[in-house]
Length: 192
Length: 253
Figure 1: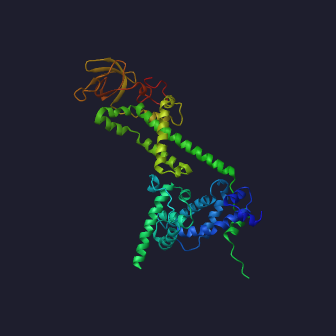
Figure 2: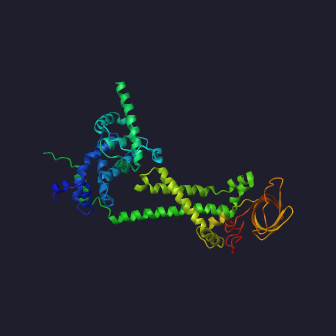
Figure 3: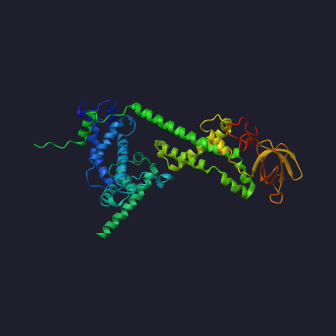
């Protein structure tokens, strides 16, 4: 199959080809997600250095486990789930930031599960700006859903699948994350 | 001329082609899922077994009847309650929740729902376990020395009965109480101390099975508590201190 033809295929179709033994097709998936993974890693891990080794590890893990991928589901969510696990392991390994094993947010049901799409574009631009400025002061628990929502355009449901938590909890974390971010941003400018 | 640094795609593909990275076959994931499900079923069975065993044991040892005897009974109840088994049951339930969280239909719902669902499943399952003669049969086998793994559990916990608790059958009513045949066939006189607990022992009739709490001297019990045992609780009784491997039916069948 020509590279051009492969490029036109969806992630899920390519994953299906890889599952059937066309390993060359996997390179297309790596190319499609390489930069996204690097950006996700750098922002979530809150580091300036290169995350190439971890990203490479993510793709190797994805290749090894590709037969477990259900082609009826979204490939990106599946890949990001692997990436999330790797980055969390990295955070634990480096003990950079405190990660809690149990989170009360996932225990109780929350009413706030409706995705808020109003003023999305303006808000997204503002949020991106704020996240970039105050990333280092935001806890990973709130940082990650914000990154996935505003830099990778995932829906609440998709973020829920990536993080392995209820969609209502995603809603709560995004809301609290945004509030934290706004106050941090305000402080940041007040100081200036 | 300088050669460009290989991209991640090139590096990954190189490793795949060199055979340094291999794709797990589909069969591996099917097997993994199967092992996982079996693990969940096994832990669920252990939790059901343990929780139903706790209730069975409380009945078999008579500890379940202790709270009926007031403050003193409550104190003994807490002392003889199998706390260790309860801790293990809780650990099994936590393990179940942890394992179930791997599934989409579980992690997509608040954890509280999963906890409630698993606790309900375990409690309903334990109730079904208790209704079936499962523990009775295993207990009987244990007392006959024919239950290798769980045998010590049944014998150890079956024997843990407070010293001042006696279970038996009412043979004859007397002015101060009644005559009772206890587990080892001994006939004893029960004197109900009405000054302490006047309401106890009022509705006792001949042939009733009763739990008596009191001080025993030779063949007389000065009882400060008597409670009737329901028919469905009776089948679980095992005699106090029956030696390991001793043949015979659990008392009183």
